[in-house]
Length: 145
Image (cartoon, rainbow, N blue to C red; front, side, top):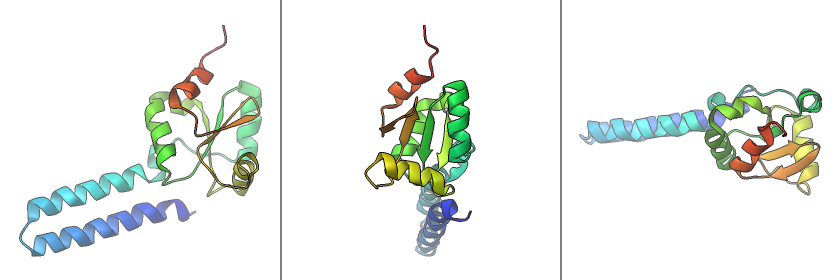
């Protein structure tokens, strides 16, 4: 449960330590800018920017019912962040599975990627796609004509 927050917490502590050093050296403006940059990095790498994660089994069941893709991700993954940001509001329509919280999700990703936990892995209609383009994922959300 705490694992997804380790990187953001480390970023906040590092930014605070660096900013404190800058304040003691007489650069409060630089300290504030640096601390803000570290806080933004911590926020982007936290679970806050991703929709609520569900378990792999539930995501697969829901995907079979509604046809929406399942995205397997983990906090701190720059490609997952890119996918989430580029999808914008469309990201809420996908089923998200955090592989650090769900061992079954991690197993699905390892099975799809030759034993590696490469994310984001997007499963559409039962077929896994590793690190697909956000535009392609958005197309998979469009209703069939």
